[in-house]
Length: 189
Image (cartoon, rainbow, N blue to C red; front, side, top):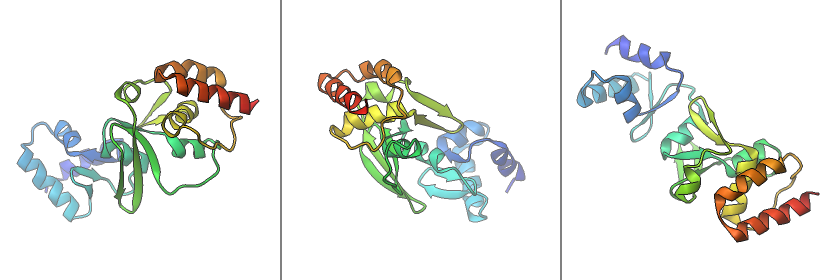
């Protein structure tokens, strides 16, 4: 096993790699040669095989893994709302917006993907690009929850910036949704 393979992987800022990521990182390797290197790296515990086609360094970042399972996706809903003190109920699951609805367990961690229409999923407004993953702002996560769940109980609406919410609301293109958002705005005052 070439130490250069592991060295180059460990020099990368990302902690989770899809097979496609690895083919782009090592374009000189044939797919079969790359598979052999990956197999040896997982066998010697230099990489973890988390899921078919997804590999990670030891001590990988969960949010990075979340975005690699299904792409495109971004972290949203209860995960962001809890982090921002808008809901107080704790969850062991990481919630994401995606092109499909699925719940997946990887390495004893549950990931819940919620389907949003493609125009919302591909709209970057209210999303923050972090190293290795994409996460919704608290305002975008709030709007995603209102859009997907309809009537939802939020424990604390004070942290929300209603000017940002008003800027983001048109991307959802839904009149019933707009009425629900206005109802929450009234409740927050």
